[in-house]
Amino acid sequence: MQQHVEKKQDWVHMVNNIGNFLAPSMAKDHPNLPVVKAEGCYYYGVDGKQYLDFTSGIAVENVGHRHPKVVQAIKDSADHLIHGPSGVIIYESILKLAAELQTILPHKLDNFFFANSGTEAIEGALKLAKYTTKRPYVVSFTGCFHGRSIGALSVTTSKSKYRKHLQPSWLAYQLPYALPEYLPAGADPEIFFPEKLEQDVKKLFNHQVDPEEVACMIIEPVLGEGGYIIPPKAWLKKIREICDRHGILLIFDEVQTGFGRTGNWFAAQTFDVKPDIMAIAKGIAAGLPLSATVASKELMDQWPLGSHGTTFGGNPIACSAALASLEVMKEEKLLENATTVGAYAMEQLLLMKQRHPIIRDVRGVGLMIGIELGNPETGEADGEAVMTVLDGCLQKGVLFYLCGNSGEVIRMIPPLTITKDQIDVGLAMLDEVLTEFGK
Image (tube, rainbow, N blue to C red):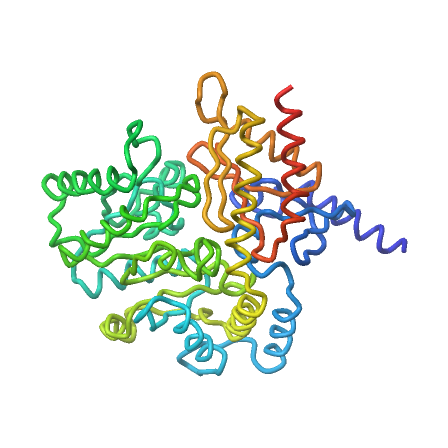
């Protein structure tokens, strides 16, 4: 017992001096909660307290933390093989995973380059588009987050601080995302935004870049780190149409929206828009590092050996965890749960909005929900209020995250296994904090 206490004290001492061990860019995110265990929809803190997790490890633990089937798959895989590398050797789990993914992805998105992270999947997608089209430029959309490596950073515009002092090496052009603030009063977003897009694209192609030199357009089908904005379906369809018109490849960054988060396997199905290339990660392997650049076999066949590579991508244990995760999602009907419980959470939050003027907007699709806070008098976004509310929620026992250009949006992304009862518990804590904040 004494040894256990001493080890815990050592642990706490290290946490309190975290800057001596980890770079600030890794160690200073919110809320830096010291935990000893996670299970289902909960974290368990070193303080002995249980915390309801409405972050899913930032949209990763879609089947919940340490699902028994995933844990067993990891153990079984480790008994046989820990490391690839794919290509030098080949193993069953990577091939079975590719075959399984073919059954849930849009038609003909059936060929895979497995990597380790969402950023790597984006890098692969951009390289594939540029290599196969022989075109030099990329068009992205303002507010989207695609990663922080140099190539991905060239198309990331959710916050200017990510680019500071880094001068991304690839030339990319930006178009405006379909933000609600652009919509005139009384206008139909399904009509206004496609028309605006045509005007924006015309200006871009007339004055900055010839469309024949554009390899691809890349977009988050739901704006993630930039504020959880759900665009009109007609706007995404217009992007597809413009790409087809000019022979431009369309890339969907589904790193955060994939694997049931929006109520379908992928947002491409939610919005009925099929991209040419997809980047998938996060929820794919229940917490193990795994991602994939996805395209048709016809496109991938133009990307020859040596044009891209990986040492750890498609790790056999991660692939086994992904297979188990997909099995859980089907058996437990988690897509249906994301739709049903997500709609229930939205209903409760809209009622909460009526009670708390600081809530400026509530928006979501499936279990991808944003709660935007703003000054009730000026209407301005209030990132400081979000941090205060997040801290208050943590003290009560529920963990949210933030997003938005100035951190003005509470990001609610619980595991897809979440129940209505757990939603009620977590939102009751949020309600209490907002009530205290408003006094």
